[in-house]
Length: 98
Image (tube, rainbow, N blue to C red):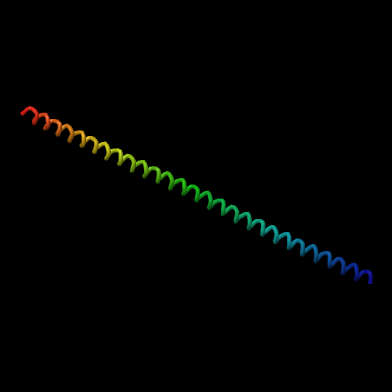
């Protein structure tokens, strides 16, 4: 009878040890999966940040080009206005001499 009780207790102990090992394996798998998810999220964030930086740089280039075009157009308009003023002044002076 004692042998049966000891054998039953040993079997129960082995069952608990096996169950706990399975639980540990499941917990390790869950932790590994969570780690992979965190790594993937970090990679996605880094890629998104790089894309945003590229888009910002491109927008700054576009804005710089637009400003340069506006300044050039304003300079051309000022030069044309200056030419027109010089022309009108010359005509007025010519009219005054007559």
